Length: 113
Length: 115
Image (cartoon, rainbow over all chains, first blue to last red; front, side, top):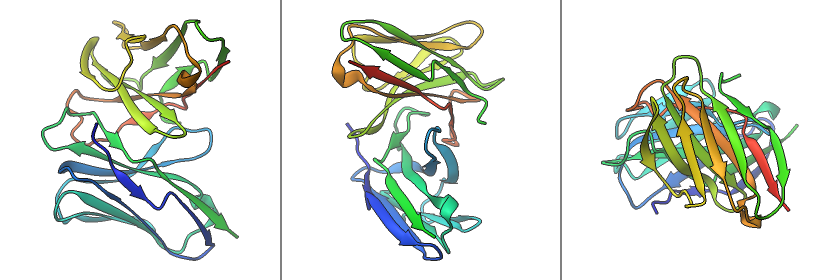
């Protein structure tokens, strides 16, 4: 099936550092989304992107929809301990079944105080 | 709290058994989705229902089935369980069939352990 390649798999950073993660695919996506999963919880939507080239911020988080529609990145600035969790990219394929999101395998973020 | 309720939260059973996972979507949401999350495969889409009808199917095994009832709650039935079925099963809901926003509201998941 379709796959999203998400990297890095894990990150260990110091509080205050900036973080960058990305997702790539060989397929074209209509929508790119970034979700965060806290331990014992379900994923929660952070940012949604709907147009190629779109750059959207949500507080300290910034995400971009790649111009080729095949990739997206998420940046977190000035990380804090509560940023710990697993970050997933997800996308809706161009021409695919609407509502059927394809998820990356996640980036596990650990923040040292 | 996403408003999506899943039960049970934890379930331990033996190979060959059958279990049913239950999901109540957010009030007013018509679409329900089931995802399987395992360590090596991430979040895999299983199946989607809209207002009682199946709308999309993903990598769902033939041993698994689901349905959405008139009150919009959904059940995922897993039968002839194998060790590899051990995973977190998430239910998510969204307001519309064509969830163009891609925003899904996830429950806390049901952790299934098959021994």
